[in-house]
Image 1 (cartoon, rainbow, N blue to C red):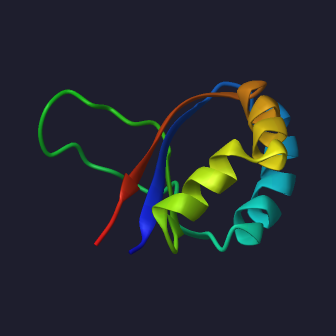
Image 2: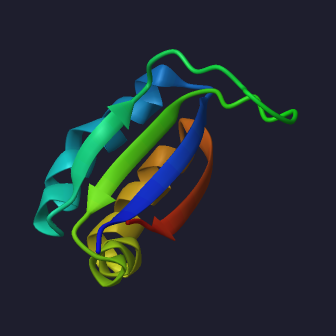
Length: 95
């Protein structure tokens, strides 16, 4: 069963975020992840959530998604991301 990492990214320094964007795709691919949403227009349909930039990554399983999140490579990359953006993120089981 697939799982999805959903990130709401609020970019405050585009230049610093570039270092993250250079390494993130290969780390995602290593865990068989596929970026299926990156940016794009969004519309809130209920509540007061106002996401800035949504990224959604599909993984083959919840376990692989968590292996990605807990990997040394992802943890190092997320430190790069934090220099250029504030992020809220979840991993959710899919169907």
